[in-house]
Image 1: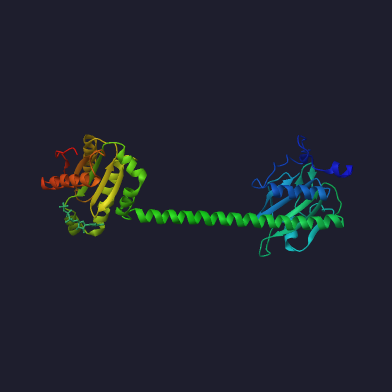
Image 2 (image 1 turned 180 degrees about the vertical axis):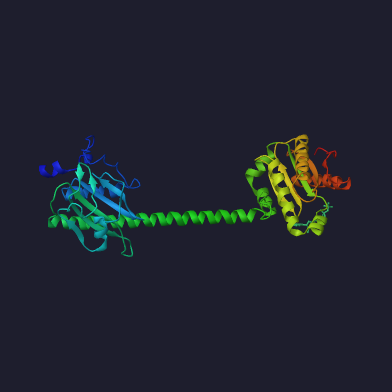
Length: 352
Ligand SMILES: Nc1nc2c(ncn2[C@@H]2O[C@H](COP(=O)(O)OP(=O)(O)OP(=O)(O)O)[C@@H](O)[C@H]2O)c(=O)[nH]1
């Protein structure tokens, strides 16, 4: 590299050497961590023997810096900017040898204000200008043919990089959308739309899930069946909409009373099933009682009550179906005993 060229290389290119900051502190390396665009502006500065170079993209009324060397502003207004003129003729490089004071917006660079500007539009895949690559100097001067051609080549490379980046971001966006849609579909397939609780399909899946089965097999658990009382009358007297609202609120009361490890399912129209791993019958009865009380206090134009049946399961001797049967029988007894109550299964179990 000729020494004259080296002397003009922006100081920031030389590690550990501070740049002359008379025109303001140079902005740190920029551009979404895009090393490649940074390399292009450094190369443009080297090639054109200029102390400053930038790639700036249009963002509303601003040119926003994507990558720069020897520049001191993150953004400059588009209004009356030389880069705006460069964008007006995308096929050509705009070279302003000596920027007349007051004619164009001043461009601050490290060490002062730019007097020389050479810029070329960067276009998107459809050929629409989206920004510029430019080199700047503190003194009046021009570009030779070799620099002219080099800047044109660098502009093409910058365009390709920006297009690749746009493409990568587009793909990322599509991937995210696809993932969100898949999640939404999965959620819809396993959750009840009215109450947001798990549905019976999800329960069937859980019964196939080794992790869920392992959690149940870890120790004594409880099964709880909750059934809203006289719900047919609620619908008949207050209408289906209010009935739906009551169901939603009752489900929320169930969800609020259980722990993260418990599983609540909308098992039937007005019936909920809750699986409580590692829970004693006394604790399960307490939780059921709490749900019963909060449902009775719901802000509805009528009092809603529910009945609950609780049964304990011991994975070493009970099949889940048997535990379910016993919870169902306990629920039946709660209904038969006058409703609005919790009954815990107390049937004798024979060891196998
Ligand atoms: N509004 C509304 N009603 C529902 C929904 N699903 C089921 N139901 C109603 O729930 C009622 C259940 O009635 P039944 O099974 O006779 O039981 P019940 O009236 O609650 O009486 P007990 O359980 O014996 O206390 C029926 O009228 C169903 O139409 C729903 O999503 N929304």
